[in-house]
Length: 193
Image (cartoon, rainbow, N blue to C red; front, side, top):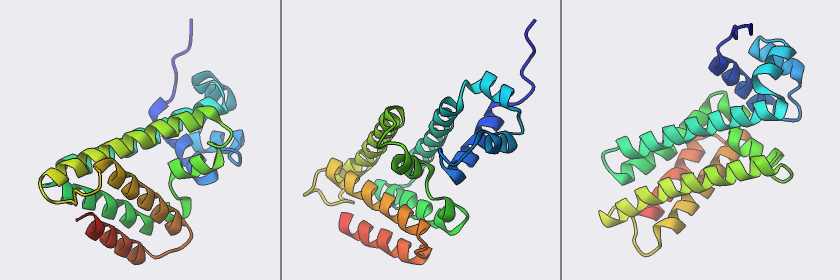
């Protein structure tokens, strides 16, 4: 008779995500994962197969959380313009805590693994495409309401927003102050109007 799993998979996966986010894939050893997750190697392999499979699950969890947060900002706002502004300002404001040092798990993975790991590259390309589609939808709605400029297609504007946002997150990891990043968001919002 098989033993019941004696740990919460979601809690263990979150702990793995935090370890990978802080150290990156290559630098995070099985010993690091064991310490972070509070599990022995056998339990990790039995539940998650191998380090790469565990990483992919942790990355998917992060991306799911990111998408849910973005969707909530865009859908719960009083207007598309307010939703885009809330999303950008909130993400930049988070750079004032320990996330600034860790950066963005998605961007860190994009830089570290996407050039040579097809599974990671495919997952991240799909995520970025989905994020751009969400932004384009909000911007298109804002264009129809006269909140955003209509002389540039929503898809192009959403790509510009996404690119600037990623740049700001990277710059925060390099030590740029949150106030300076917020100024860049304000400039971007003026360009969109």
